[in-house]
Amino acid sequence: MRFPLDLDYEEWRTLCMEEWHEPPFRADQICGWLYERRTLSFEEMTNLSKELRRKASETFGPAVPKIEKVEVSKRDGTQKILWSLRDGESVESVLLEQDGRKTACISTQVGCPLACSFCATGQSGFVRNLSCGEIVGQFLAMEKDQGSLIDNLVFMGMGEALLNMEAFLKAVRNLKHPKMRSLGARRMTVSTAGVVPGILALAESNLGIKLAVSVHAPDDDLRDRLMPVNRRYPLSELFSAIRFYQEKTGDRVSIEYLLIDGLNDTQAQAERLASRLRGLKSFVNLIPWNTTCETFRKPSPQKVEKFRQVLLSKGIEAEVRRERGEDIDAACGQLRQRRRAR
Ligand code: SF4
Image (cartoon, rainbow, N blue to C red; front, side, top):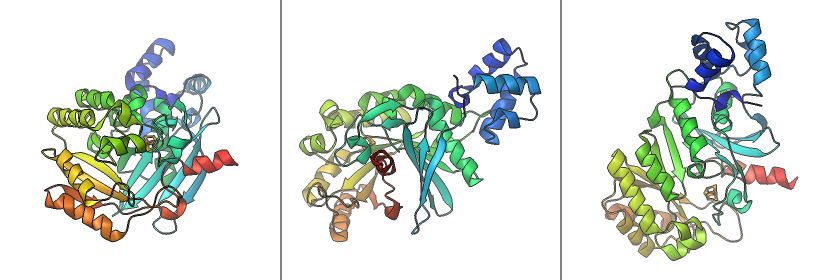
């Protein structure tokens, strides 16, 4: 069975002309329905002949994952969506709204092989990659559900996008394509835990999307423990890749830094982070740990501010990211974990 959002524009043209013996503009019509009007059923594509609608319905399975559950934060309206996929697996997306702009965070894998010690998804293991259509489908189905366009898209839900490179790159190309969603590249960001070959490939791809890198520790010893991916790609290699990316693209890179009390939030660690970032065009998002658990503790606001001040004093731009959706556990993996525990 094929799935409509797995195809790119050229594949639609080939299918229309070579298998269905239709003129090539049918590809434009179908992509218009799917990506602009977010009509995800062929039966509703009324400018196609009945015969073509029948053929298309027989060829393809459902366009998008099914919404299984939505939780909405009473504090800030952040929505967390649990999707059920065609094989019964599930992934999560988050929809945030700030200053009138909507941002979707979507998943690229079921589970994650990188096993970061602070992450519910990482602790539950890796199941499989999502297809291009399952990635794009989360975004389009959220837009359909909202009845409005979403401004920004971040590939940072469950999974590591740069370990699912083929489907991820195809998803970005389809979302950018003028005959499909035509979402500007600057509205898309990929967040990585530091998969160096992926960063290098992204630098060469000319896709123009933005890069965010989760660093979370300024030294290899600690980062090895927090993020096992560091044993494969230690900080020196990671920062060489980030510098290469910046030379190629000229883009500023976002550095994500989760602050955990007594672990990575000292003044000395802030200084070491600053020295790693010297000469790099970057912006540091400081994210105070905020989940209740036995292993990690939340740092005090004073410590967070002190850490930020050290970075600023070294000429590094840094901001504390306001927590969103705290009351619904908006961090990735937790809704899926609860579903698996049922
Ligand atoms: S934080 Fe991201 S990269 Fe790390 S285990 Fe979780 S999903 Fe994977």
